[in-house]
Amino acid sequence: MRKISILSSLFIIFMLTQNVVFARDFDLRKFSEPSKYGWESPEDFKAARSNLLERQKLLDRYENNKQTIRKNLIKSAIVPGWGHFSCQKYTKGTIILSLELVVMGIGIYYYDRAMTYYDKYKKADYIVEINQYYNDAKTPYLYSQGFFVLGMLVWLYSMYDTVNVTDQYNQELWEKIFFNYKKDGLQVGINGITVRF
Image (cartoon, rainbow, N blue to C red; front, side, top):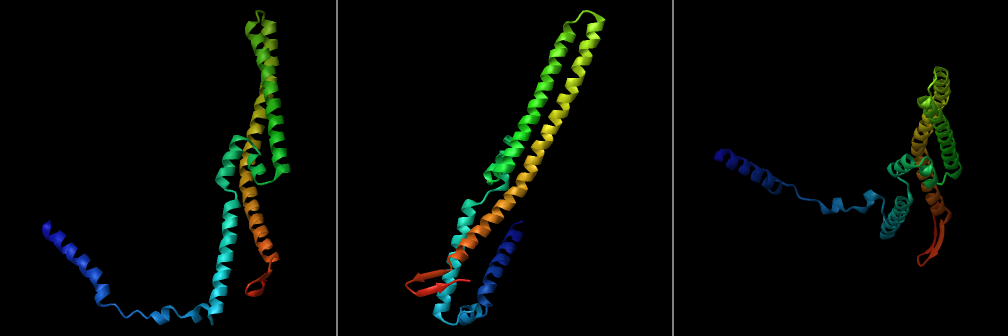
């Protein structure tokens, strides 16, 4: 066991030193040749660096203002339409939230009505009243279950649509940031007038 450990250690040392012993000369000129990046002068390098820094600022602005799908899904799972409100889709969010409240409210109304008849059914003594209250409780109960299922479908649609709305919001945000960047294309600075296209 000890021989294997020594042999493996020697092998690792050999592999690490092989690169140093047999390495070719590193050509610093070839590595740092600015013409391969399209830089013919130091001004080109400075312009490329400035452009890179400006694009990094755009990306930072986008990253700070974008909406995450996960966060908006959690919001929509808590309250239908909340993810839409976060993405500034107020009309759609209002419609979804209102629809959810109306549907669930109607479901609760029918459920309460069914339970009222069911309580009367449990207290009834005569067979005619028992049958009547049972039948009176059955119809509103079925309606309530239908409205609860419809409410769940609205809730699920809200979560599904939140994904699409969040993607759309992020795309529009990037286009707005980039459009404002392009709109501010004419700048006067210490280096002269700069025009971006």
